[in-house]
Image (cartoon, rainbow, N blue to C red; front, side):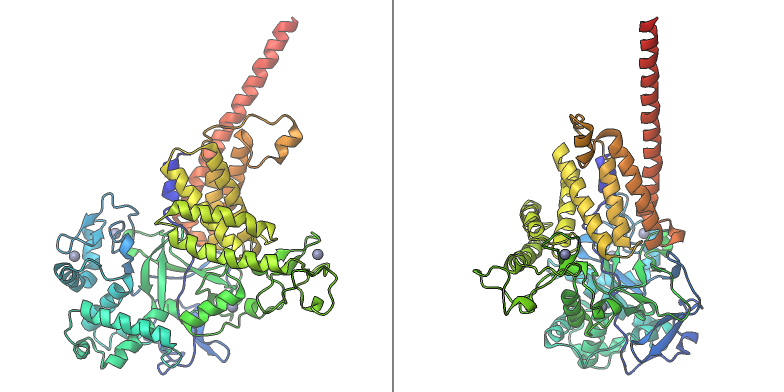
Length: 588
Ligand SMILES: [Zn+2]
Ligand SMILES: [Zn+2]
Ligand SMILES: [Zn+2]
Ligand SMILES: [Zn+2]
């Protein structure tokens, strides 16, 4: 497999933010259970809008379904590419992935399309947007408004055109409001967005917003706040973020940190139907069970999930995972006695730091130590773990920030911190070790694409990707799209032609211990991993979508590898036969 192929499969660091919809809570405008008759026509009959005392308004399924089943598929009401992606994708279908063959709008010169079909389909949205963007450019402002502002602009122009009574506008207006719960910091952000929006729309005063059916400045702030908490990130088939979108029917789905469904964009339809959001079952769901997706990255430990949900979505999560008293691999360190069990990772304040002079056994503070869940051994090196946790988190924040601007520095931070966290006892699934491992894998893959790679970099990337897969397996459900993509990445890395395959080790025992292996053994491993990836992608991206674009790509790799291994096998048996024949000739 070529590096170009690998590059094509890997555009960006995979991110997994799917649904940003609000959790249901009482709102002034709750659609009744019968509302679906006139609104939400895109929701199929086997799903119902219901209200429960626990989670409020949500979507329930009326008949059982299997993992990989597409529960429903819908085009978002509005979508806008992020600024970095504007010149790389079509603004209508979000296809493209590199601007080869894309055509630029000759008026604003900022928006691109596949062809005139995509351009015509987008015209209801782009007509006014084009003028607004030309106004921005003419004003000498260098910064193009963010995807959030452009998305809001699209909503405003469309609601003006459709009128307040149209189902489209009504569904947008029924997005849930949380104005009572908005934190001062969030309020500031919403005000800032509202001001930028007014300017982008070309209004000279906020009162002119009445022309868009919004009565006052306060209503506009509320509108912006509802937009922010109901936005979905559109991702490409390898889960890299592309832009923002709003879909009122999908926004009805409530959150769980261990969701039974995911929202994905497998890109399996013709361009005029894309970007199509597909809600896919991750496990068997029984009749009359609620459909739940995750609004946040569920590889994070509970404390971080709760903070993120409170700050952005204004609620405290009480899902089964958050309420569980069992230890969670997301914040665990290996048992100090290496019994195979784990200890909950200590947190500042929760487990007492022992004085540095302390040696076990220690009276008094001993009971507050973290203990192995299997053999009950106490974790002695609380200080070391806490220090590693603190510097690990700092390094992760910095490395994530520098990922695109200074990848070398970012890589350096990862390579320094991964061994520190590992030696402090963190499990591969724990935070921030897993996040650093995934980031490091992404950076190594980027290296492989940009330069002619050394065997060492390639092997490092394989080792790192293997750890990422192991870490994700510990905490995410089989078939989760993040797991599928990580496996596909590992399989592809293993299948890359080795620049300098290692000679076999001196002994078979030594050879067996080597990772990654070289030659045919490596190719067989690549095939195994790609077959597993195909299975998982077939669930997470929906069975009818065959794993989405990445799944289809993996299928092709599998066929190629099977052929290559077949040739290898044939070559080997021919060589054996020749050798045998030679021996026979010698003997005779
Ligand atoms: Zn297009
Ligand atoms: Zn234009
Ligand atoms: Zn939760
Ligand atoms: Zn133990």
